[in-house]
Structure formats: structure tokens, C-alpha cells
Image: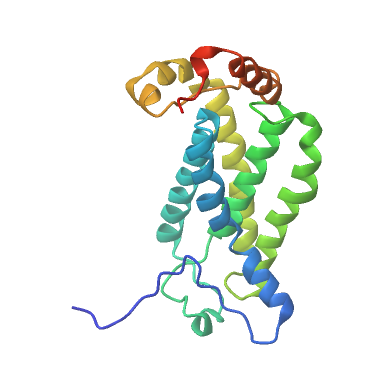
Length: 222
């Protein structure tokens, strides 16, 4: 058995002590973790939307593709990987950049097409928050020494391509089977639903919640 020890690097991000920008960018580089564990897990627990589930599935597939490419081309990380204890993994393309640009692309397309509870007027959120976070994540991986400029741009480009492609696949191919998934055993057991056909989900839920309050069959048992 090998005596070499390897670290789980999910939240293991290094920066120079006293470097406030590095400290900030170290947290920025963890945004994909926060989105995955905080955003999509809570979305499944509280919303059960098929559009969100396929969004998360697409991100997962994207990361598998990233790993396949990395292990195929085996491009080394920059020399700083020795200090960062990251030389046992490959650097091209950057998985963080790919994740964030996939997320930004898919989220923007969802918003622009007003799918689910996203509206076109919320596009400012994508422009002022989501895309800057994607760019900062890309920059953080170079600044902190985990990737070269070429590696982060490759990840970003692949993320945009896969995000756009997956959006088309979901909403042109899979969306037709959403009703079947809703009526399946899985859909009924987990209360999975698709509200992307409803023009204003927030208004729909608001009005139906108020109507249910007045209906005796929906009263909570004391």
C-alpha cells in the first residue's frame, strides 16, 4: 500500500498570509461549492423543479467531461502547484471556470426565456452578479496559482459551449417528457414538478396559496 497521502481539495484553497485580495479570491473560488451544496440541494428540498434538477444534472455532466479531458491530455498545472500541493492533478481545462461559465450561461438563458420563476426583468442579476462571479472565479484560479491563463480560458469557453448546448437539449428534447416524469413513481413520490409552462409562477403560487387558505380540505390538523 502506498504511503503517499492525498488531500480532499473540495474546500482546500491556499493564499499567502496577509494577502487580502488573495483571501477574498480564495472565497470566490469556492462559489461553485456554495452553488452546488447550498443552491441545488436546497432547491431540490424546497422546490422539486425539474428545470432545476436538469440544470444540476448538466453541471454534473460538464464536470465529468472536464475530468475526462484532463485525464486524456494531462496538461500540468503551473509551477506554483508544488507550493499548493496540487501537482497530482491536471490543469487543462480549469474545472472551476468551466463550472461557473456553464452556470452563468444556463442561468442567463433561463432568465432571458422567462422559464420557471425567472423573469426577463431579473436579467440585471445575471449581468451584475452571476457573470462577474464567473469572471472573478476565473481570475482567482490564476491569481492563486492553480491554473495558467490558457487553462482558465479553456474552461470558460467549454463551460459556455456546454451550458448553451445543454440548455437547448433540455428545452428542445427533454422538456417534452417532463409531464411523464411528473406522473412517474419517482415524480409522485418526491413531489417533482415542472412549472416552466406557467407564465408567472410567483403570482400563480401566491394566488393558489391564498385560495387554499380558504378551503377547508387544506386546513392543517391541530
